Image (tube, rainbow, N blue to C red):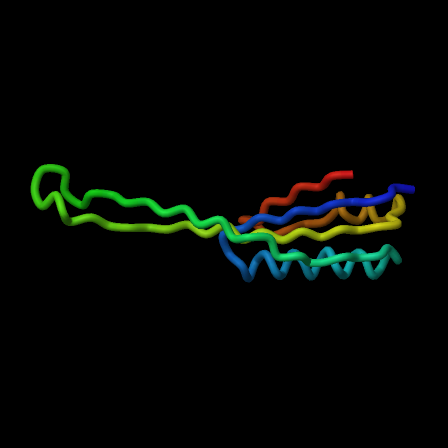
Length: 101
């Protein structure tokens, strides 16, 4: 019996992230473990500025930004069935998952 399982999810697309969170919540309900979350963590915003033309028009620049959305789910009173279900979980492409015991 494991005490606590922390699952962190990262994605650039918030819709895919919410879909993955729903899968994990469904697994936790099916395996009778207690659930805390999903806890929204701060969104990481990275901004990039690139010159459009290197030689002419120096003030002409483009700006881009990339947002990384994060969620934390804490599962308590987990059992072997929960661990096996999480190992077989198929999450959409574009969502990164970290699991800590």
